[in-house]
Image 1 (cartoon, rainbow, N blue to C red):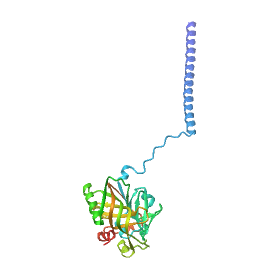
Image 2: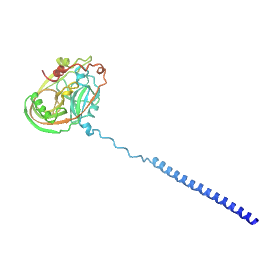
Image 3: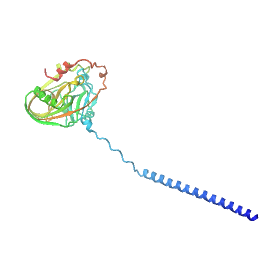
Length: 305
């Protein structure tokens, strides 16, 4: 009997000892895991401290393909004809949306001609100057120019003949798209205009041109005509049809084209399907009556008659 009791006590001691040993081993294992995790955290901290930043995501291209196929318009021509000459978009912002186009400047201070990414002003004496990025624009149309059609042209004696030729190309390519056009070469004659800078309170554009328009004519001159075509359905937002500006090759003469006689030139056409209009935040724009029919006034400001 004593032997059995002794054996039972011995077994109990052995079991207790084994349990403690197992618990201790388990604690040691957990301690080991925690130490390993701490080491990993230390490595991560050291790596971050060493300045190992994640690779930055690439920035998007400034002019994606979609952007290049868009006519960007500042305000409505109808707002301009009503006398809203307040600049709303900077020249720098305009350049971000195109490299070729036409328009005007704050206070109607000259004709805007954009060519190869440079913005020029055709002044009231027919001279030209490069415009600073911080100047503002009340109305313009620009795009990134990619010539899809090119041909040589010569012996086209009037602006009416040029518009007829361009209309033929539009009929072939699709009359419901927008088109930016360059005509680069030599001209027998260019009849152009600009206007005097206006002061507030502003008069409607048709009235301004009756008194403050200045016309000039140059003969045997090299240069570029930049022309915009808007489809007929745009007549309440712009001038439907063609609007032409000119700048000489030496960048000393320019303005809105009233008539032109082509000697020999290269015609480049960029059909464009996209359209993006930036409405202005000016003091006048919210109160303008843009439902008024301005077709006659627009005809007056676009032509010499």
